[in-house]
Length: 250
Ligand SMILES: Nc1ncnc2c1ncn2[C@@H]1O[C@H](COP(=O)(O)OP(=O)(O)O)[C@@H](O)[C@H]1O
Ligand SMILES: [Mg+2]
Image (cartoon, rainbow, N blue to C red; front, side, top):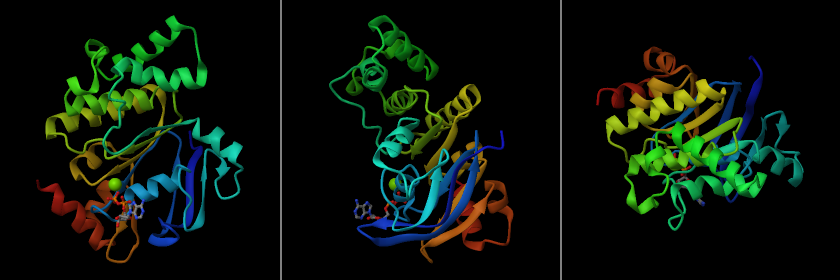
């Protein structure tokens, strides 16, 4: 513990060289859960893609699993990517594949284990998210909450050291969303996974996150960094506090 997994300094992210969010600086230790927080359109997904090395930042630097992404070669970037898991907004399961086949896909691609072992690895991950009874169903045959859990199982397929989750609770009813939060906490407990989670849902953030990066749309800069309870109660960051208390009442 105490190992730094992710860090950035004056990171500026955007699209096509145009800045959306600047001054992002923080560091995250192994096994912690970080929430990237802020209103819709403020740049949360954009920041997540830059932090994970999927997209280049506009400027500034960040390190992930000890790799400085600004100077990494394509090969080094790929090696780092192999140690990450992703759940993108909207789950993005392959619609023609069963849940089991969806989870088997990354395992087959990277490890190509014997058939029986492949099945066992996929079944284990699906059992972990409570989908043992639905493994042979197609994505069209399951609920939104089940699809999110299946996407989480797929993100866990290769035992990632860092998990990037983009709005894991979006579109779920409050009960199903809170079940997803419990699952995220269980994953961290079971595997010690470091988790970066994009969210604009305050109850979920308060339940799961150790730290929060609050992105301030008014200034286009990181507005605050700290434990969510601190941001909810501190006078130091009025807009972060307003964001937390406004949605917290619902
Ligand atoms: N691929 C893209 N190309 C250009 N602009 C984009 C792209 N993706 C998102 N944007 C813009 O960047 C801003 C931030 O988007 P995003 O990071 O998705 O916000 P959030 O995840 O916080 O809702 C928005 O104004 C959005 O329209
Ligand atoms: Mg987004």
